[in-house]
Length: 445
Image (cartoon, rainbow, N blue to C red; front, side, top):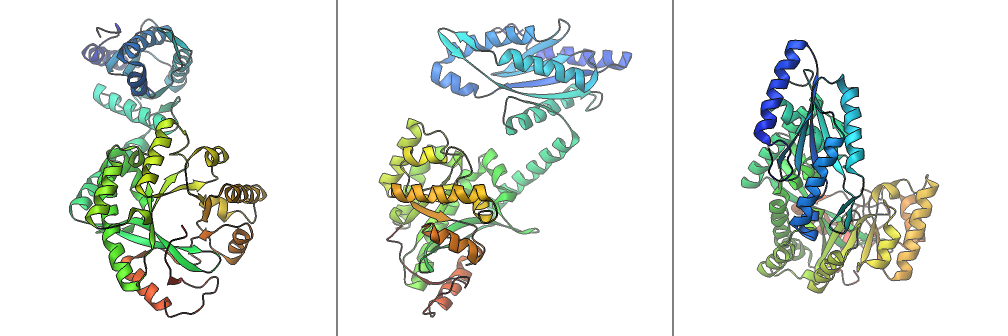
């Protein structure tokens, strides 16, 4: 048994599962295996201490015991990982009933050493014989379902299905291919111009990572970003991308004779990584890149909780010289609160909200309100996904300052971008809807 909680340990749980499987085979019955992970348990240990964490685990096992039958087995597999064996269960309905009962017991407030805690959990459930006929396979299936529950927003139940296995295999294949891509330099940067809406001139370029896959061609971040982020590979790719940006910026500016600013996207994990500032500083020093020309784009979700740590990190990046932009702004209800509470320089309106602003009255009002408030607060505004003159006119009437979209230019590799800039540098005027011309400096941003 587990010495801390009194639950079965891993060895005993495996033994009982194997016995349960043999019994179920003999009597043609079903059993279920539940994988349980406590949401954000590490945060409790880090903030309140391991003593509180241990007391919480002990109380949790008592509650789980109350939510199951005497013939069932609960085990602590390690840390905050738990598993439950339900013998002779009446299919998925019976397992779901027990699962919901467990969640109800877990989420009741817990008083631990003068601290009232409310915890949630993610549950994954698999069934014998439907999903597998061995302990190892059932445990793996339950874990896959549990991770699906975490990705679905936590504090919920997910049942294993065969699609999860296919998705897991796909993710493993992509992860392996990503490692190969890193080692063989398969990534490259594309750049999409950012335009001053009032005169049609380029004021910045957004750097976008592309994977030049040997058999699938050019892959967009949607095809690999989440897996790279989950596996930690995005830190490596991100470091390469920023160094490459610093290198290619010199080529672009030498060819065009103008200095531009560059927008660079960060995921939540990249933003919270302790070495972010050192990585940025190191690349800027090595390649003589002025950080005042760097626009860091952070998603609204990344900054959703404006804690003291978040504000401290933003102020540190701003003191380094970066321009801070909230990307996808307006998609969540926290938007207006963030405008007033975070030290940011610019908002980038949510692409979907912009796309529907002319035929969706609610989104039209949202954009009008956000742009008006941003103007009053002295925060610059930027809209992506602009595809037609009507959208451009609407944004211009509402004092949006910068735009980006296919109406002006798609994202291009550095050499094609240089050709485009040089070709259009000969133009004296630029009409709305034309491809981009005449790059200028970014002193305004």
